[in-house]
Length: 84
Image (cartoon, rainbow, N blue to C red; front, side, top):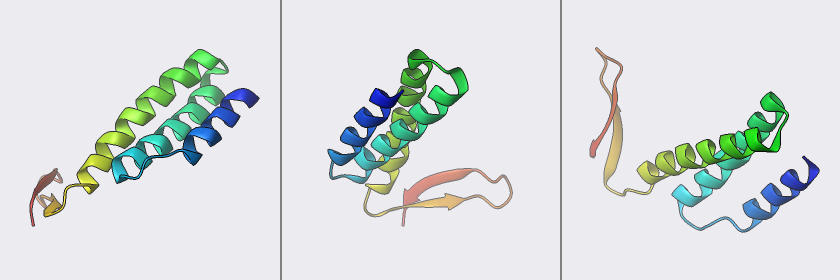
């Protein structure tokens, strides 16, 4: 577990410049920590890190699109992305 934490800190230090890449690294770090604690195994931490990285990257891509905004439909609560 100690080696995993060191690897995550190193990955965070080498994080990319775009918002999508930064949120992917953050998602991977949080996912690895939660997966490692929940499962107690390296495999569980790796799976959770992958899931966190994908989720973080997808959320970050939304933030990288200039000229687009996030809107929430008041009646359904659905969030959608469209031009501002």
